[in-house]
Image (cartoon, rainbow, N blue to C red; front, side):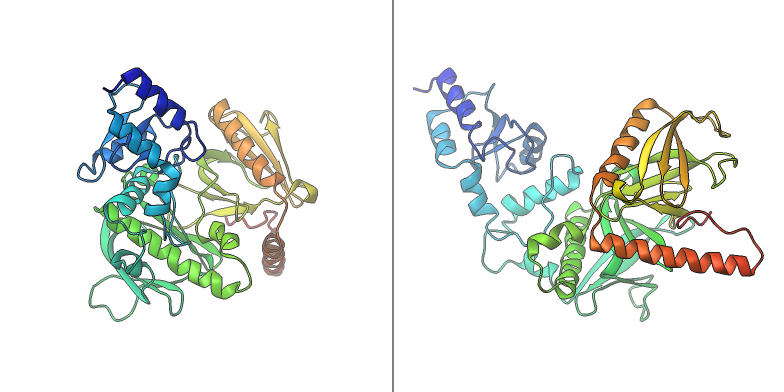
Length: 402
């Protein structure tokens, strides 16, 4: 006869073991739920997603629910590590494995891919094969460049020439835009876009950052498109860096912003009025870009942030000596070419931005970072020369447009 207290204690001991002490699906710490049909320990959030797979997974609390001896024995025999060897046996290197702080659609589709569709258990799997097709096609809703409405567009990923194309009509022969995998990035932005399946695609166009905002009503479709982007970009990186290990390339496939949000900024003389702008900071590219609003198609400018060893520092600023706007929690970013002053609305936001800037500045610069710095310097010199010829005041920003 099952003893609830004894079985709950066994489960609590099991969940402390290596492998079981993190959620099997998102790696959140201290999972206190378990799927007794799959034999995995999961966190509260993922347990809710497992409930949507009622024919595959059934969950119980390891602290509050009653457990039969047979179920406890199954959990002892299985556990997260053994389950991972079954359900994650053949996960491709490019496939995105969500963390606990990722958006819901990524976690839901990861769970469905593992346990419902069994995409990674080995053998010939039609779902896995679609990600690496020479031509992957998906119809999505895309936000207009200058308008708010979303329009149906056909997107095509090619692993032959490593490009992403989109067409305005199904029978279009010529693509509206052809995007190289070289500088492409994609990541989910549900809150920013106001849609649970919102995906942002960024790339360089005429040395400016161009953003596309897309979504699909189906979580499976939009996540499949995202992983197809990652598969195509991973193939591009493998060809570009044939001697590097897969583990060295994975973090380069796609990347999240380290910090995003509104700040106020002033001009290069710090006598200009402060203007409210949307900023995004990426720790991989070391770029702080700013936009007029969060869903702008093109950036207004930006700053490359090097390391402390190269003269980059960040500190608090009172803003008393500048023509500050409505906000007064100031930040001063020192670069070799210029001092930047930003204002945050709240002290908490200033602390978060200071921490984000500090993380980037504390990172040693890579050979790619040095190459980016040299490229930006050459562009600045070229631009300054052109402006001087036109008898205008030379720009002081590293690569600021307005």
